[in-house]
Image (cartoon, rainbow, N blue to C red):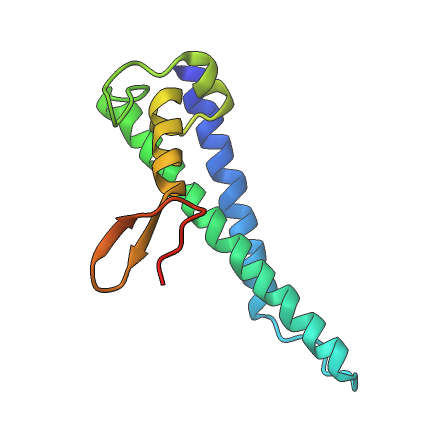
Length: 132
């Protein structure tokens, strides 16, 4: 467990540094050279991508912090869905995994066939069938 905790701490440190770097890069004003519209669009697209990546990194950072909390609470490595122990091989590859492989696959299948309806909440619709 100690090596996984060390791995999570290192991942958290690296992510925090990357988030800080991206945040600085997106808030720093760019050079105000006279450029064409394509340059402006390209710079804007780069800023948008940085913001998207930063959001993903922040989500991953929350998952890492949750895993570290679970280590402290002695609940780390248990599937949140079924309660079975998550195999160590899975935790070494994805140390912040919340689900065993079976439950993760089940959740992904359900997610694939689920879409949100504004008035009716969540409704399951197979991918090939679209309601009119």
